[in-house]
Amino acid sequence: MNQVIETLLNHRSVRDFEDKPLTWEQVETIVASAQAASTSSFLQAYSIIGVTDREKKEKLAEVVGNQPYVAKNGHFFVFCADLHRHAVVGEMENVDVTSPIESTEKFMVAVVDASLAAQNAAAAAESMGLGICYIGGVRNNLEAVRQILKTPDHVLPVFGMAVGYPASLNDRKPRLPLRHVYMENEYQQDEQLYKKQLEEYNEIVAGYYAERTGGKRRDTWTGQMASMLEKKARMYMKEFVAKIKMNIR
Ligand SMILES: Cc1cc2nc3c(=O)[nH]c(=O)nc-3n(C[C@H](O)[C@H](O)[C@H](O)COP(=O)(O)O)c2cc1C
Image (cartoon, rainbow, N blue to C red; front, side, top):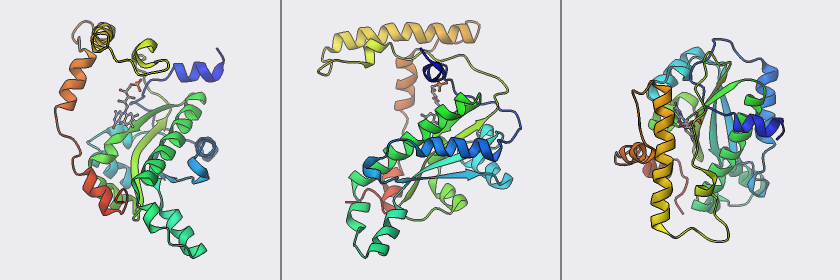
């Protein structure tokens, strides 16, 4: 155990922040930590947009599905998968890069790069005593987000991240037991074992919710997942991504 691991294991999303802005030094440290993440083939295929304008934050809070902590936090970041910079590279170097930039492979590279950078940012912020919450709600209405942030083609806002001083803290949410997610040498193929493991995890999750709500809520994990997955969500994504000229080849 060391401080890095303690910080990682102590994570819980924070959705209630003090109205106290981060200093530029804090923002700089968080972004520099994000940038230190590994990046596929040195592509650095992401951008981070810090949203400081009050009106924009209020508008974003609304379009992500009325999440007030998108407006009230210490700083709000939007992590974008970004291949626009590489289109500029093509122009500078007089090379036609259109086809690779618009490929599924480079789309995945950019989403992975943005995610790795974001998780480094999250760990850095948490190590500074700040709280974070990812905001996938950014993908609820990407057309609106694109207009607010003025992102060009080849740039996909993947998620936001609210960062700030926690005003209150949730309990840590129990993850799947390690033996459920860690397999050795080959994929675990026994479906009966899979179901048994999920029943075990349901008990853990139900206990967590019961304790958090004084016995009012006893959601299971499979129940939560099933009710979420039976609803269609963000079904416009394929078309939107193609419209901004990503993932089309
Ligand atoms: C990519 C991503 C998007 C997320 N989007 C949201 C969101 O829009 N709103 C929110 O309140 N939490 C969001 N979360 C937080 C998750 O709900 C949370 O991480 C998960 O329930 C586990 O809880 P914990 O982070 O407290 O351990 C998101 C997390 C990730 C990784």
